[in-house]
Image (tube, rainbow, N blue to C red; front, side, top):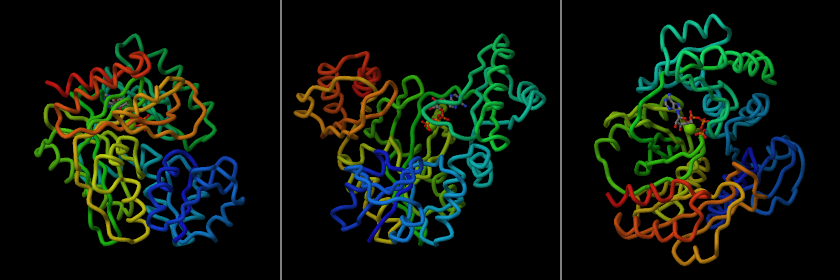
Length: 379
Ligand code: ATP
Ligand code: MG
């Protein structure tokens, strides 16, 4: 079967690697150049969306910031999963918030802002501290403003007004103000849903961010109460979208109660641990779901952690003695994810020890959350 992925980054690459044993031939459509490329070698295979669609049995996406005309063309082919509506929803916080409300899942109070009047209404209804996010094109904490005190109001509004004015999205762009959630931890749930509505859901992952970018994800302990809450919200959101494929939901854990932060209609960075830590990884399960094949077990086979390799950092080969290294064949640039490291162990205590060993091989400033993750596991 031929699968076309919209987007030619590391997620398409890892889908291609996971699909090969199933004879699923994955190619990628680079939305910027219009080229059809091999997701692993990046060899150019052809050009143009129409050609890509013609050669594909199934179309899917590795990211949500895709022009609406591309999405509608794919939708019209009848081959697209999870489909236009799911991708548009993941890429637009307005639609995303409306979906969360419709699905009846707990999420932060918000107000949509198009002009100064809306901003003032947000300030009076939500108040400070407040976080403001762009509706479109946000990722890795980009397109966000944090108001911590009343002194931040005027300078932040000037920034937001300039941002809206300069947006290439024109009137489609706006910002959303959200109440600042005093969370204890951030966790995410990743799962696959097939066309019959069957689910395979991975255990919750705890995520540590540094400067808005995911640093470390840990899938170790069990928390049945949180898992039950998360799975109920996952089912509500996935059913509301009649979703087919892998879906990720990011949550805030506030004193044992989960609140949805955002959704990602795709395989997700916080699910990379499943490559070594689960029966069937998220990339394979995504392909299984969109190709209408039986879903694989999402059970965790052992405590596992994932550490992102971000920017210009050094990873000595010695790391391979204790961990699995996944490179994306990308040139290092500040803030750019160029690979990740998966670490597995038989027990949580052992995982903490191996993470400490790993930390001793890596520079602390290059892998800032690693030591914290290791010590929080040993508690
Ligand atoms: P991603 O790379 O996950 O797509 P993003 O840029 O889309 O990130 P969010 O996940 O919404 O943005 O926000 C980035 C981070 O900012 C969150 O992981 C969280 O740490 C913090 N954050 C976001 N919203 C809130 C909120 N309402 N209250 C407190 N912190 C928040
Ligand atoms: Mg996020």
